[in-house]
Length: 231
Image (cartoon, rainbow, N blue to C red; front, side, top):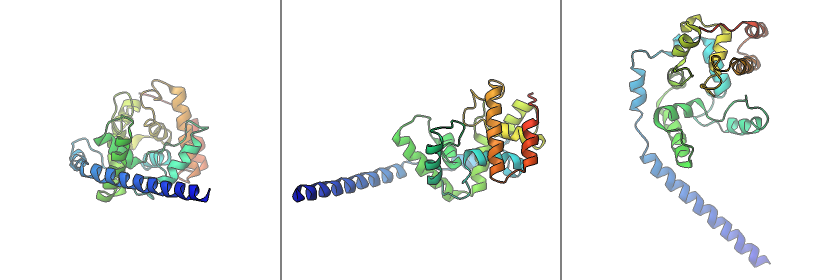
C-alpha cells in the first residue's frame, strides 16, 4: 500500500511539473506573438479623442466603481476581484464582472469576442504589457474613449450626446451613473431599449459609489429621485 501511495505521489508531482512546463512554453510562445501597442498611441491622436481631465469626476468614479473598483491597486489582473465576482454573481446578476478595465482595453483594441483559452491568455499577457507601458490614467482614458455603449455610441462623450444630448461637462450624477451601467450589456440594457433595467443598473451603481465614499447620502438620494430625460 505504501509503495502504491509513493508511486501515486511521484506521478502527481511529474504531472504538475509537466503542466507547469507546458504552461511556461505556451506563455513564451504567446508573448512573442503579441501585437504592438502602437494602435493605442495612434488612437490617442485621433481628432475626437477626449483627455481624462475632460470627463466629469462623477463619471470616472462611477465607471471605476462598477467595472473595476480595484483598478488603481492591481497590475492588470485583479485576482481578488475575480474571486469576489465569482461568488457574488451566483446570486446577483447586477454585480461587478471579473474583467479589469485594462483587460477590456486589451480586448477592445486587439482581440475578438471569441471565448477560448488562447484568447484569454493573450488578454492577460496584453494587460500586463499595457500596464507596464502606460499609466493608470492613460489606460482609463483609453477605455472611456473606446468602449461601446449602445445605440451606435462609442466612448462616453459620444454616449452623452446620444442619450442625453449633452456635453460631458453638463452631465448630472444620475446621468453619469446611468452611462456607467452600459458597458456590461450596451445593446440590451440601455435606457432607450430597456428603461426599467437601465434604472436598476443606475441605482446599483449609485449604491456602490455611496459604499465606496465617492458620493454623500444626500447626493445618492437626489440622484435616485432625478427623472430620466432622454434626448
